[in-house]
Amino acid sequence: MGRLLLIIAVFCVSVGLNAQEYRTAEEEIQKDIHCSGSQYLAYPGPRQVRLTEAPQGMRPFYISHYGRHGSRFSSSKDHYIGPYRILAKADSLGKLTDFGKDILGRIGLLCQEADMRWGELTPLGARQHRQIAKRMFERFPEVFEGSSCIDAKSTLSIRCILSMENALTQLVSMNPRLRIHHDASHHDLYYMKYDDKKLKAHRMDSTIKVRYQKFVDQYDHRKEIMSKLFNDKKYVRDEIDASQLTLSLFDLASIVQNMESRKKLTLYDLFSDEAVYDIWRIKNMEWYINYGAYTPNGGKQPYGQRFLLRKIIEEADSCIQLEQPGATLRFGHDTNVLPLVCLMELDNYGLRTDNLEVLEQMEWVDFKAIPMGANFQMIFYRKNTQDKDVFVKVLLNENEVSLPVESDEKPYYRWSDVRDYYLKKLDAYQD
Image 1 (cartoon, helix red, strand yellow):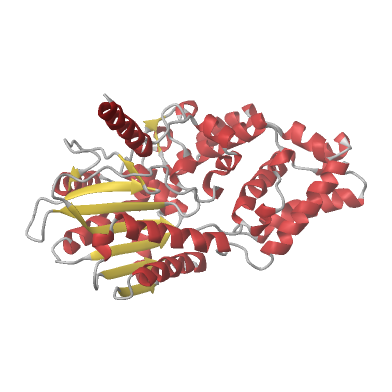
Image 2 (cartoon, rainbow, N blue to C red):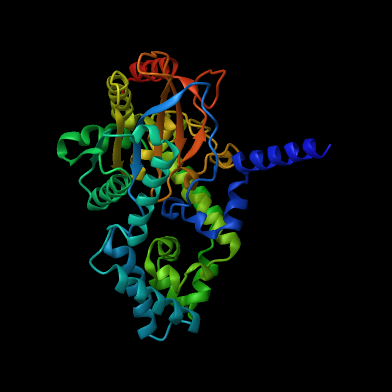
């Protein structure tokens, strides 16, 4: 009996380590307010402590990756200076509450830290990519054995280049024999950061804007926020774009978690719990309209990353012919990662709907897909170099996800099935 209880206890611990605790988006935000920041969420690390064991005899031998840069400063000077100037002018006219003056002082500190660093990688962002690379090496050491080749590419953004360099530095520190090739060139932007102007033109037509604005108005908290900041309602009515200022302040509150200032200040106390959740809902809807398969605009926005997905498939087909292919690492942006995830229909991100209110219910949640440092890893497995029956599994932010392909070995799938599914989908696309 004692031995049986021990076995049961070990099993329960194992299941607990493997399980990814499910919470609704609202529960996630209640647990950690930073999740409300959507794409500004600082990379939280993997939820899944232990990965599912591979089919018997299978070993990882190649990784294909696309990752977003790590934590950064806000990308525009105006994101900091704009709200600061609005509040500073009001302060000079005696229109701020004491709390408004306090918020103005905090924003001033953010402006100082971010000065002339708009859009650049923060120290936290560099550390995130070293940690992601370290876990990749530790989880799949066979891929990085001996003198394996690591082919890394970045977009031309300095934050992406530095993210790449931090990841590569970490890998080389763990195996100095690795053969590294790294590059950042206009030559690769056609798939690394493709900007499909035709698709973009259909994202937000006048009808969709009206529909979206209905939700913006429904979840409006500007009066509540303005009353905390300003002591003169007439001044707010005549001089302040309250809706825009509210959203700008929320973005600032969200970006703080990526800066060193996070250690000494917050702006989240400006917002009630209800406001935090409602503003996040608006942002989640906007991400879905622009990059998800939202049917009123044609449901084709994810195809903006069709060249990236085809490149991933082509390079994988080439690399799996090699005895020791190593890894292909790519470093880009959230606006590449999210539509790629939707195009590949990972978990529920292939959702096609015209109902923006069901996104959370259907588990289409932006911060779970595109935090700072977001990454997609496709891990390839085989028994030996002669084995042609290659399997693959996909990690999104280092957690196992499902693919829209049948398999008796989930989360592992035959590469031939995965390849055929996506190539047929890509070939059927008409712009």
